[in-house]
Length: 288
Image (cartoon, rainbow, N blue to C red):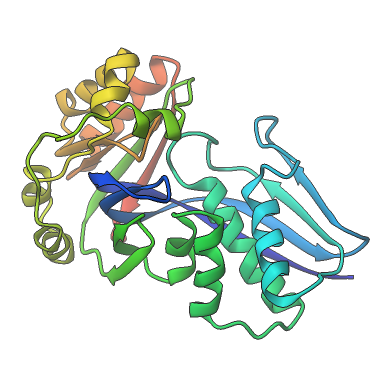
């Protein structure tokens, strides 16, 4: 039996601007993806027949709706019939929180199966497969810790992040439907458009104050209107010293970026004391 154990990291959307709808049902967006040192672990093995999915989390589907299952179907359509594959997912990323866990799992499985079976697909070819699985999947195949995403979010430009400080993720006990969040948007949208190239430059410079004055997430409008708790959490992070606080993707995860550790730890204690899940991680090699 051949097997690989691979990591499957999370992401946050440091900015999410919705420009309009597309004929394929998706929306045109401009976003900045930032990789987060929070991950699932996947054990991928070649055995048996068909696909067997096993997850440590009860909310992760084991059937054909799982993005891993879709990735295997799309890959088979590209290279032909595949042997039996078993995927065990040990969840570290909360599902349904806008952190890209499902997309990251799909990307990790594509990489693992490509290696285990010696398919010889290049990174670009894997990204082409990933685009057919989901709009966020290519980011996790890009090999960059940050990127500008355009169109569906899958037209990518890798960038380097020089941000330093502390990233606090807060996980309230609810999930938000991505399709509902996008369908609830009204056009034209406010706030006004921001130049994504300026944001990329600020990220590469590590200019947290400059980013904080410019970034936003268009989906916060409809989501906060329905889930007032999420707006409260964002406000609480800012009140406790976050230089920048946003909802990631369509939620429900909120994150704050702090310039120094004392306020980051204070905010983490506050959120944990409210009964919400928290994860505090360093940015740019700064210890927690």
